[in-house]
Image (cartoon, helix red, strand yellow):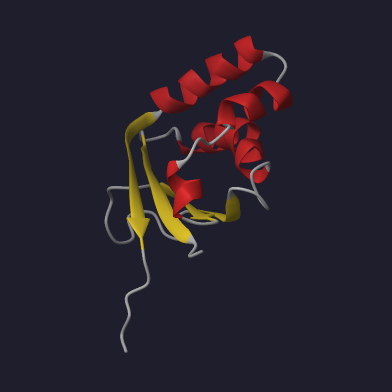
Length: 117
């Protein structure tokens, strides 16, 4: 079994980064944490160190390391986890809609180590 890593890029609307991160931290990060030791081996949030550093096409990235390819493409179980973690589903869904309203773009990039030997 070979772990698979995917970078989930987000470009947040100007001025909305803090609100986006707050909603991500509150609602989505716990769902990812609940998958550690099962479907996910590691989760790592990343932000640029400096404003305007490098390319300006992303403002937040999540690096997820999946146990293997089957865990990457198989059912996530996130809906069931969300129901268990957030009994007030109306608020959860409203806040998740808001989190995505704050985005200009979102894309996923599966990555692999480049073998240099």
